Amino acid sequence: MIDRILLFPYSLSLRLRHFCYDHGFLFKSAKAPVPTVCVGNIAVGGTGKTPHTEMILRTLLSSGQWSQKNIAVLSRGYKRHSRGFQQVTADGSASLFGDEPMQMKKNFPSVTVAVDKNRIEGCAFLTDPSGLQTSRKGRRCLDKEMPAANLIVLDDAFQYRALRASLNIVLSPYTRPLTKDSLMPLGHLRDLPSRIDAADIVIVTKCPKYLEDSDRETSVRELGLKDYNPGTCEAFTGKGKSIKVFFTGIEYQTPKEVYESGNPRYIYSKKAILFSGIADDTPLRMFLSDSYKIVRCLSFPDHHRFTRSDICGIGAAVREYPTAALITTEKDAQRLLDCPFVSEHLKERLFYVPIRAAFSSEKEERLFRSALLSSLS
Image 1 (spheres, one colour):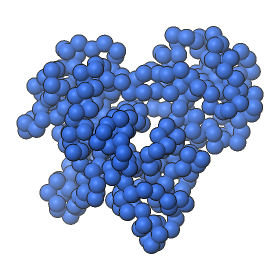
Image 2: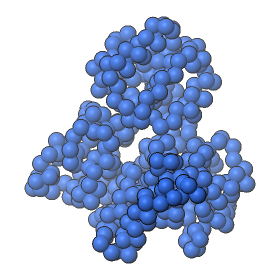
Image 3: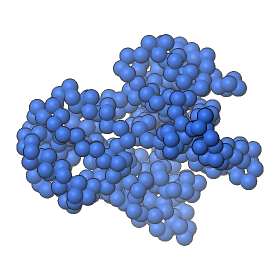
Image 4: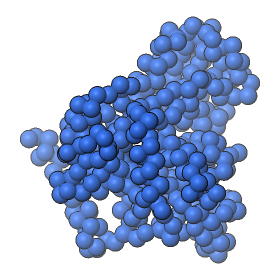
């Protein structure tokens, strides 16, 4: 009860905002000129947007429907130093474009990746790049050469109500059910739990490897949905709207060198020093514990930009455990490449662990692929 009283002003402002957008009062939503897929969340941080965005890209690029078309990703570019619309280039930096856009561009070089806080403007430039030559705002763009997009994947745009996506995919972590969480700052929710009703597809992320149908049904109820059918992966809102619900986990890949000068022999060490600037490093720690004795674990804030002092602290841990591998996340690796304070001594033992989102069953993967592609036809 006290939580509800304290959070009432924030909750009320969210309800009023959504009411205005839903009814076209004061605020209006517009659609992009091409199909758009929004990948978003209701809880802040730790839902796995980047690996799921990459999973969607793999699905699109492997389909006959979109493999020969121009696909683009539009992100805000959190904590970047550049302004306005920018096309992300593979030889760019996380400081210029943001760590997640840099990661996606390197993993999918054929995909146009761009950043713009104004998603309406960003979609306009992606679908008609000639506007970058004539628009005052477009003059800021460092690289204006790009093909016109046939489809745009919107990274973290579920709360950007001014743009109405063709398909809304909402991610929700298995261990933090919406109905058992609270709005920030008392909880993790950045939006009302009832906003799940606006989703077309919900993906419950970071699930255990093995799930019974009863576990799935409980998880769906904790999302505020009902009548889940494990055979069709379909559930319903209180108003009867059909929503597809899928379950995914994280698959960790073999560690890779962050720098070209990395020495692969450190991968086979029995000890590891883990450091990361992500919302929750628990799953990564559990994965590494199967192969390494984690002798030191250093945690930094999400999207943290590493300083000289941070690198000195990491270096001190390496001096204490000179045979240990130094392991971080793929997202952190993008920011490390910008950091001028990393010595050659650290570079040779620095590795990152690539991750992929994976469905809990082949049936779910087939149904998701069908739901995604049919919504864009």
